Length: 192
Image (cartoon, helix red, strand yellow):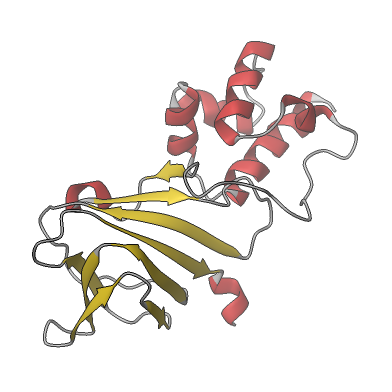
């Protein structure tokens, strides 16, 4: 693989994992400008830098240099407790932490996340451009759909399928200090 192919592979893997240049920069410890220059073939990274970028992407170094390059894999094994923390929708400000479970899978059509909820200021209603499926794994939540008057208390094991662009928000139920859920977002491109 030549350096041009390497730079294109880094960009392809970053985009396939749904990471911004800034997020990859933070994970790898490099500046946003450096990652951008590498991806645009304006900076030749050292082997040490390539190793750090590969680690940040969760990819083996050899995948960048194989004749086939980085390809879609038929499967990716993981663990619910080993997700990659992803900043989403100012979640940390609202006591919500997202952990991506399939971030290493190239070409995925779903995005599964474990979401941990802790006490914080409730967020405003939000919408997603994809369908989503939610299951509450632990705790108790108040799930608001469309408006504040439409509140559903969810217990461990309860599920919710939500179509794209339905306004919703979530907060911990009274007396609950931690909840954990699993949400799977569909790829909006598949909905056309």
